Amino acid sequence: MADTFFKSYDAAGLREDLIDLIVNISPTETPMLSRFGKVKASGKYHEWQTDSLAAAASNAVVEGTDATSSALTATSRTGNYCQISRKIWRVTDTMEAVNKAGRGSEYAYQMAKHMKELARDMEYAVVNGTGNSGASATARELKGVLSWVSTNVETGTGTGTEALTETMYNNLLQDIYDQGGNPDVTYANGFQKRKISAFSTPSTRNINVEDKRLVATVDVYDSDFGLQQVILDRYMPTDKVAVLQEDLWKVGMLRPVKYKELPDNGGGPKGQVESEFTLESLNEKASGKITGLTTS
Picture 1 (tube, one colour):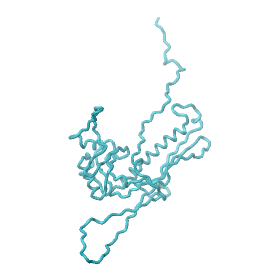
Picture 2 (spheres, rainbow, N blue to C red):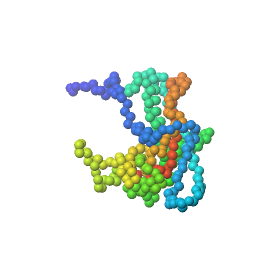
Picture 3 (tube, rainbow, N blue to C red):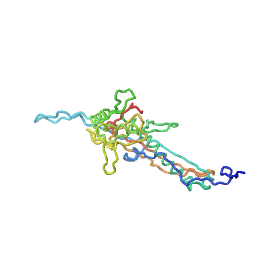
């Protein structure tokens, strides 16, 4: 007679095997929000002025002639609306009391998580915001980098399915330079970053002799118009690349990110993180973008 085994599938008292760790690989980097300078905003519409010099020209004066003034032009006044971004969470008293894996307080865990989510939302707005003055039932929205840049736009042949080339990239750098800008930072998503890294690969590959690794990436592009730092940004649309003179972009904070505990109406604690902020584009002519790129 064969032995009869008592198998784990038949048991009712097995303990679950749950490690005391929560794994979250969602990205949290916010390059534009982190790198742009910070300034204080003092109103819901944040304004600044731009100006330009007269074109350089021959300037020779006849000896002995009287001095005469030339016509003056006024500065241009522009601005951007402050946007309110908010994240709210709530947990029950029971959820706080029960034994949990990976965290002691669910409320504290959710607060840390929502702070990171708010920062990602702010980065998305800085890159992609389209601008809105708002109304009683409409949220104000800031104008982001891609909406601000309008003077220097490179589209290649304009087919909308064109691969990014070194010629297109350098044409944009020259356009920005001709307008008086000094571009120094390029923001791209992963696909276009690889295209930029491939600019030099037909003729040059750098090899790190010490650890014998082949380096086929470009973090700094040495152009005729200066060094361009190339930065990955997950929130840059796949079909676009932004080339900026970075010191002319600032994040204006009307209300910096702040945590607030909201009233507990009896069911459990409730919290909020909120910020009111905008984007300064001190002169968009010093930056540019490439659009209509293929994404595969």
